[in-house]
Length: 477
Image: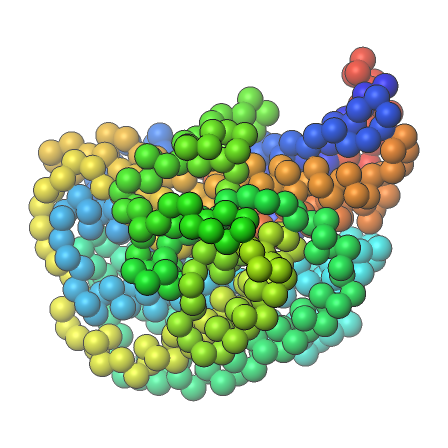
């Protein structure tokens, strides 16, 4: 008798979603679906707005990664104005993006994910959270909060506030920095480096006891996509697109971001508001790819900073000569990227270019189409705008990191469920729910960004017979 397990909603991620596990006649997991169940419609209601408004509007898509939308939107505006962004503005944008990656990765690792593998999968959900972590490991919890604060302080120094700064604009940025700001960042860096090293040492210890998780949490062949520099170096706010496969071979390289539609197509699933992008040359079945920290470390030839490159060499051992394919190692990749960001920030605090006065280029509407691509903490972010001669938006397409990862998240959930759901059982124990949910947390999805959804993720699991009869239900607020 076929059945369905429904997890609704998924907890400790940003936004609202549910998971369906479909069981075959023998009670084995046959398939899984990740349903994103709320819709906001940002693409549609941006139509008719002016180009100048778009960075400020789209930054409000999400309170966790507003900077990512701010910067990608400004880059789309740069393309429509056909301007060269001043050197100081480009570096200031990059500095803000580095702060954004640090604060978001710190939130994901220390607050949302570490309670699972530090406190234990069997720990009750009321204790398996950041408050439980603070009770058992107060210094670690405090350090994680401070590391996130460091990234947010950089955002506030540049943009005037930590959340939704209306700072980057088509052509550049609204304001610069002074030496006092850079000195404040410099003074905080030693603490940030120390906390990051604690996180790295801690997680590498976790890896010794979580071999099964590494093996079963989204460990499958796929493509990987992200931005790289001209020599294939790690990139976060420039460069061009690269696709590699699970063997580490380059599939497509140095693709101008404005040509993304030649390689990426989007399909619509009737069970979700979240679209499912895929690598167009291989079709929907073979074109699954992943983005984000795991992908960025797989596609780059080097990070370009000494401490991060040393960690990258250790990370790549998990690929056994090819790409690192376990999504459980997204957590490790985030920590390495925090280290890379801190090393780059340490260079910027001494860069005199940031103190230049020329921070914005002015122009009118010179093109009717512009694409802005930047690396958000969760992965590649695409803003694609079409405007009329007056600069009013006529069409908007946003492809968010969580969207890119949609097909991979579905496959990850199915793989975990096959490993932990006992065939024939109608029981839904808490550890099983948490393990399945954690497969989604590995990707740190941002569903408000993806569907254009608001609110907190809570969870229901149901076993449903082919006739629609509910065999068992477990609910969590």
